[in-house]
Each structure stands twice: as structure tokens, then as C-alpha cells.
Amino acid sequence: MSERVRPYLFYDVALTICSKCFRKLEGKIVFQDHKVYLMKRCPEHGAERVLIADDVDYYRRCREVFIKKPEMPMVYNTPVKWGCPYDCGLCTDHEQHSCLSLVELTDSCNLRCPVCYAGSGPERTEHRSLALIEKMLDAVVRNEGHPDVVQLSGGEPTLHPDFFAIVKMAKARPIRHLMVNTNGLKIAQDEEFVKRLAEIEDFEVYLQFDSFEREALLDLRGGDLRGIRERAIERLNQYNISTTLVASRCSRFRMRDVSRSLVRPPIALLLRKSAAKFSSRPTSFVQRT
Image 1: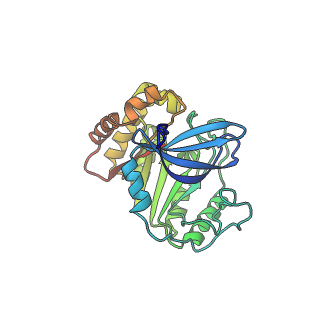
Image 2: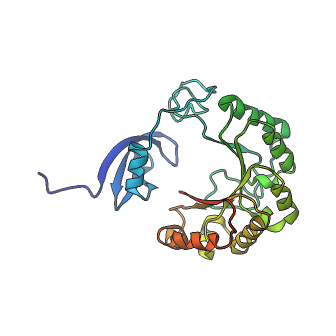
Image 3: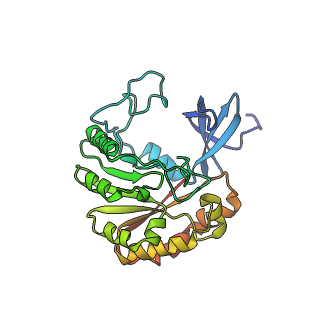
């Protein structure tokens, strides 16, 4: 037996893409230091290693135990031509229906987050028209019949001048659960807006909530939003609005500082601090990388 061993345990192969040129690549999933990584190599841009899970046991249970037959959408929108991921829309090779659908209302945003995948910002002023958004909602319903979850997103969706008209359109459709993805600025700054949110039945706020630390917020969001987060929580609590707190992790921006409030065990502190500010109303917490 060879004395030379790799520093990881190989688990599986995966289809992936280069994060720079989007070339299709074959990667491998490995376990190292009690975490799960995706390793890939682009012939032009070199090797990448991406953290995809920080709990090997839970990841394995998701892959090997918590499995079920794939649920199909009622309608497929794109044919198979170039292969995954370029035919997505969904194509007939896709192994799952849209368990959560995003409807992007606007490209505009009142933040300029360094980690924004949509490239949104204050300089982008384009809002989708009501007619187009209605078509988008109809497409979701056509594909799913009774969509499980629809999230109004952006950009920052609360900036759309017809936001509540859009909510009304969505509520008129057979959507089981409706949410809004928001950075919380509007909630923190406009109490009348929050009062109107509280009037919506079966509605949830998906609140960007990364940290209580200044350095982490500067890295992730480009500004010190500690006061905004506090006021947003106070308003949501005051008006008893169901809320999910959403923390993002990014390895590209000074993770030494960001990790102080985002990775275990400090994440427990974030949970305790945020939970202490909510009353006994529906509140949950998710973390995304």
C-alpha cells in the first residue's frame, strides 16, 4: 500500500462550471477537515475549491438518506440542446420541479453589495412592468399548478413603485406561500410600509441578516447596517410579521473578519442575539454560501 495519500476523502464526481468563463467542467466532491468541497479545474483559469457544506454527516444524509423520487413540473420550458446547465429553463433533463420560484421585480437596489450575484445597485433604475410581472407569475403557475413557494425578489423588490399591486396579483393566484426577499432598509425606514405588509395574509419576510459586526457588514454589504438591522427587527416584531433571517457567507472578502459572526460556533451568538429581539412569533433562520 502506498504511503502517499491525498489530504481528502474522495466522495463523488459532479458537473460544474468555471466561475469566471462558465465553461462546463467535471469536478469532484471531497471531504476534508470535516467539510465538503467541490474541486474543479478550468484549462484557462486554473483550479478552484468551493466549500459546499460544513457538515459531512448531514451532507451525506441529504445525499443518501433524505431522498425521494423527483417531482416533475407540469410544463417544461426549454428543449435539450446544449446540455446542463445551458438548457435550463426548465428543460426535460431537469430532475426536480421548482420548489421555490423567484420573481424578479426590479434591477434597482438601495445597496451596492460586493457579493451581489445580480449586479444590482442604485445606478440601475429599471423596474419590470406590471404586465411583464403578471406574465412571470402566470408562467410560474403554469409550470407548477399550485407553486409551493414564490419569492418576490430583485434587486430590492420593495423599491418597485407598484409593490403592493404586485403582491395583490400574486395573492390572486394559487400560490401556497408568498415571500419577499429584502435587505430591510425600507422596513427600517418606513413604518407605513410595514403597516401595509402586516395586512397581507399568509406572507413572510425573507430578511437579509448577515451579522451584528461592522467589519462583516462592510465586506458583504458595503456599509455598516447594524442600526438598520436593529430597526427592521423592531418593526417586524412590532407588527407581528412572519420572518426568516438569512445570513450569507462569502470566501472572497476577508473571511477572517466575516467569520467572526457567520461560522460556528460564533453563529450561535448571531442566533441568540437575533432571537432575543423577536417575540413568540414565526421566525426562522437560514444560512447560504
